[in-house]
Length: 375
Image (cartoon, rainbow, N blue to C red; front, side, top):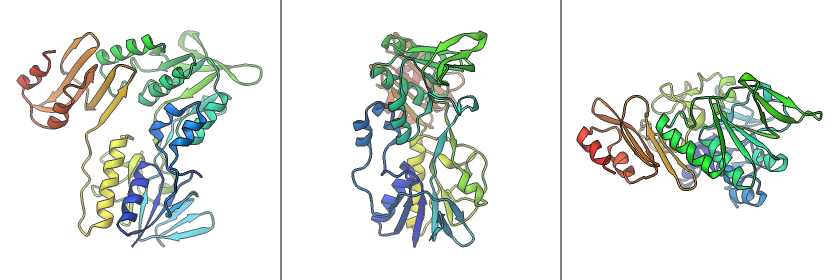
C-alpha cells in the first residue's frame, strides 16, 4: 500500500513518520520549501532570524516532497503537483488552516498575519513601533507578549468584551488582563475596528475604532482565528462544510481519502487545536496500518497560557454556571452538567489539574468540587 499525505503540519508529519516507521510507502507534500517546524513556537521566535531557523528540522525525511499538491483526482487516485502526477492507494488530506484576514487590510502596507515561517520572517523585517495586535485570543496574546519582550510597544485590541473569550469566563479573563497590563501590555476590549489611516507612502499609521477613536499603529498583526484550508478537497468534489466532512473513522465522502487536523470537520466541529490534530493523526495511523477500523475519540479540549508568572488553564466546556472561588490572582471554576464535570478554568495554580484530567466527562459530587475550593 502506498499512502500520499498532503500537508506537513503536525498532523500530516506525524502520520507520515509513523507510517514510514511501519514500512508503509509514504509521500508527504509540503507547500513550503522548508522542513517541518512547529507553528505554535513561531511567536517566541519573532524578530530573531536565528531562532526562527532553529525551529526547522535539521534533516528531512526521504519521503518529504517540498512542493505543493495542486489538485486531486479521486477517480484515478492521483495527486498532481503541477504537471506531474503521483498515485495513491490511500490519501490523507492534512492541509491545515489559513489565517483569517479582513478585506480592509488585505493590501495594507504594515499589516501581517502570523501562520508560517515566512510570515514570521516578514514580520521581523518590517516591524516598527507602535505595534497593534488585532485579536485577543491565545495566539494573539502570545504574539503580543513575545513582541513586547523584544522591546516594542504593543496594544492588543479585542472586539469581544474580554480576552480569551472562548476559553475563560469574565472573572478569569479580568485577572489575566490585569496581570498582562502589569507586565506592560496595553489591552483594549470591546473595540471594533472600523477604518484605517495611512501615511503619504501608503503605510498604516493608525486604526480607527468606533466613536472615531484613533489607535496609533505602524505594524498591525492580525490574529483573528483561522479558516480550514479546504480548497483542494472542494475542487476534488469531496463533501465540505466549514471543513472537510469526515465520519467517525475520519474518512471523507471518498472511502479512500481521509482528512485530519485543522481542515477536518467532525460532528460539526473544527476546533483547530493541537490536541485534536494529534488525536486525529493517531486514529488515521491505526486505520491505515491495521486491518480493523478504529473510531476517532475526540480528546479533552485543553488550552494553556503561560503569562510570565501566571498560569492559565482552560479545559472543556466553560459556559454556564459553575462552582468557583477567587483568592487574589488564584481563581478556579468547575462546570458541572447533570453531575458530569464538563469543564474547568484554573488561574494562578495548577494544583488541581490532575483532578480535572482524571475526572473530565465523569461523574462528580458537589462535595468533591467544594473540597477543591478550600484554598
